[in-house]
Length: 65
Image 1 (cartoon, rainbow, N blue to C red):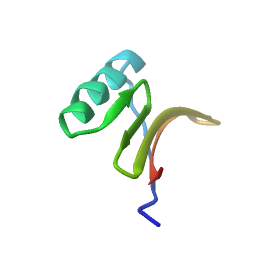
Image 2 (cartoon, rainbow, N blue to C red):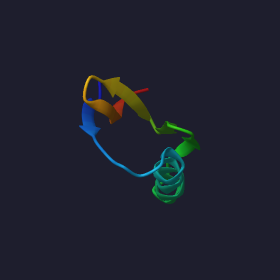
Image 3 (cartoon, one colour):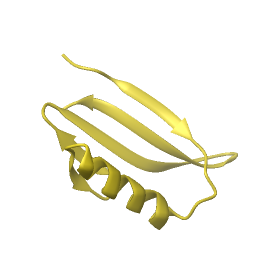
């Protein structure tokens, strides 16, 4: 039971800036964790880079814990 959401995004920003933004912002919203792996209640949020034929994409996935 729970939400399942997966989106892909492209960015030219360095990985350190993107992960730094999420580390700071998600903590303010009650999420625990860091480095691409956060939890809150019975949900987890995963953020990672996926290599594709057209270049890297960011995958943001929310799913039940």
